[in-house]
Image (cartoon, rainbow, N blue to C red; front, side, top):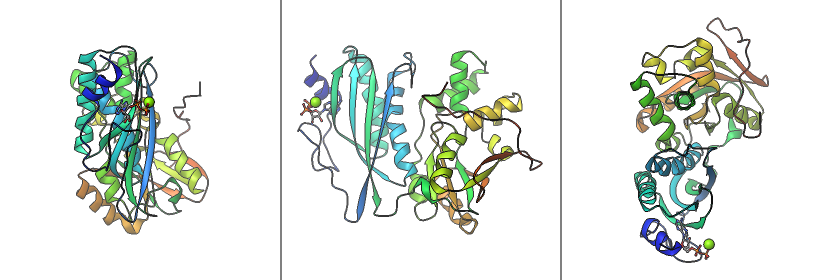
Length: 321
Ligand code: ADP
Ligand code: MG
């Protein structure tokens, strides 16, 4: 099977929302009047971002999910995406499963594949997603203000727990492992929440590298600091809620520096608490208040007694140790 047959069979669908999809030199996108395009790219490499043993349908899902998560963090509505893929060989069963997982998530968000590039090489997947957001209405990292509450959606740390189980550093009861593995391999981008938070949240980011590392980006861009309360944050590890017990420090590591969560961390003034809860209810996404934005720069994690935890948490950094 040649490159063009492969594209035709697995990656060509009729364009519905876009004026022109796969097949020409460019695709054409048409944001509605008054809307800006929100654009995000993520590159996934075998060995670095996913394991070679991962189910291809789940890989297809995740490759798009991580990009849609970026759109969610900006309050953007998905419109279209492109797919650049390097494949070591043409494996039709693999391609069919990959495309099925990819397209199922795309269809769930009415986000259509409009183009890409296909080449032979070590397995790599690069998706660029395009979304729409009202001009001037995107949620940015730079908008957090002193006195804002700090909120997080969903659960934190479970994806990293699954990764540690794969690495053999922890052994989990089967149900806990299955749930954590689904968080690692099938993250659900918080699109509906991002849309509902337009005009409510002052800033937002999606958590891909770990809560504290990503929150650090918001604080630097906004020129503020924050205090995070360890207790409500650690309550967000679903595995712990499900009865899995570990030392407190291990749970803190998972929740604060786990990575691959694809939840939203966002800020909003206390006067908007009801509006935040309404956005959560409207989008069917649980949210929890875990801290406070302060004028004092830096990031402090405090225990139940209000005293700072003595330990440091490493963020996940691809160029770090
Ligand atoms: P060009 O050489 O002009 O860049 P290509 O021959 O690479 O075009 O691709 C032909 C068409 O197929 C283009 O419309 C391109 O966007 C699309 N395409 C290529 N690879 C993919 C892919 N993996 N998924 C979706 N569309 C693709
Ligand atoms: Mg090309």
